Length: 103
Image (tube, rainbow, N blue to C red):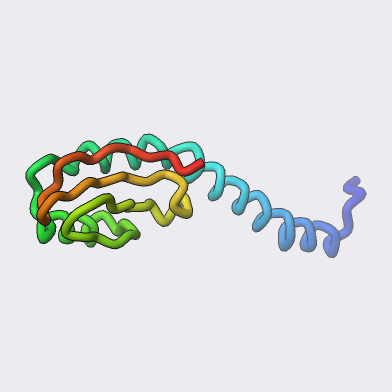
């Protein structure tokens, strides 16, 4: 004999399942974000033009702004910018791209 009434079971599913799914969702992106961004940063190569990098950003759905010279931070929206790629451009050409953990 079950001690839970149908109402209690329904409330448990209604409120418990979304909470469990939220924990799984956020945990997954927290655990996999570093590896995902390291792989993305390794695809940005020295010599890429600003136009090529812009197309890459659009394709990978990264967040950030590019400048013709200086440092640009390209963040992963799934990690809320915590895991990023630091890209250095000189005269509109990539010179260095490296993984950046914004802690």
